[in-house]
Amino acid sequence: MGSETPLKLPIIDFSNLGQNPGAAEWDLVKLQVRKALEEYGCFEALFDKIPAESRKAIVGAVEELFDLPLQTKMRNASKKPYHGYVGQYPQVPLFESMGIDDANIAEEVESMTNILWPQGNQSFSNTVLSFSEQVSELDQIVRRMIVESLGLEKYFDEHMNSTNYLLRVMKYKGPQTTETKLGLTSHTDKNIVTILYQNQVDGLELQTKDGCWIDLKPTPDSFIVMIGDSLYAWANGRLHSPYHRVMMRGNEARYSVGLFSVPKAGYMIKAPEELIDEEHPLLFKPFDHVKFLGFYYTEAGQRAQSALKTYCGV
Ligand SMILES: O=C(O)CCC(=O)C(=O)O
Ligand SMILES: [Fe+2]
Image (cartoon, rainbow, N blue to C red; front, side, top):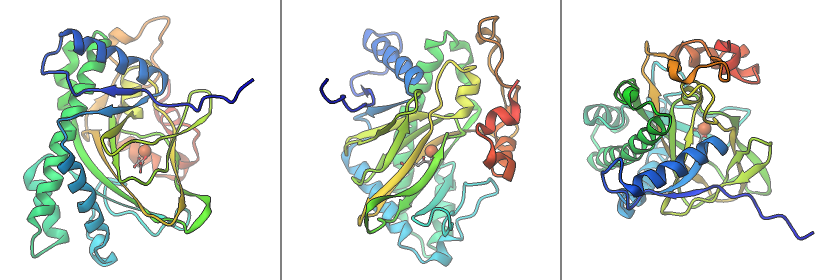
């Protein structure tokens, strides 16, 4: 037989949707979203509301951020685990990361900007804020489609009001080898929805349900949309939360930026009763995402095959 076709993620175009839930185009795209999230937990998205200048500017801003001295970057602190500066890890020496909580709220972005640039950096905070606002629109469309496709429109407002946006930026040094080196270990995201944008250095890989790894090759125009464990739990297993990792080769640094919708501390994530029946018994007891994150970063949490199952599996 001939060679196998390489596996490829579905590409979904959100550009011509209009603002009209219920229109024919909306329903078509909604079906594609549901199918991709059941099958892969992930898809590549085109969304022209995020203009080319905005995409170019964010990559520049991320580079500028990582070029700051280490002492400065370490001032990027957060009370929540993995929301602030991460780097210099012996097990993943290529990886560095920082985060901005509430990246769609001007005062929050400005206050983090001032911590990093006490003399101010208006263009950095403008770029981060407008990129986060634009990407959050895509997050909202995707989540509206998910909730609708599950027949759970009545929970939409509660679902949206229970989350914040975290913008995380990542840098992976080129390993200066032709052989592939680990950039970020295989994991599932713990939040609701993650939307990723990268410079044009590939490296992100996604595991399919049957255990194959797909190389993701988003274009300068496209975003990777992926669901995390909190949405998997809320949907009582109806959608897949995929393992993914970053593998690096060559000399060039990879920069990526992700907008993460994250459940608020104190909010209990709980599958709606409509999604629980004999065929679909409850998979996870109600849990607080921030407490779950706390467990994930303990030794037991890191050791677990599925931290979510160990933490609150029924
Ligand atoms: O750098 C990437 O593209 C992926 C980053 C990632 O998986 C994460 O931050 O959870
Ligand atoms: Fe991830």
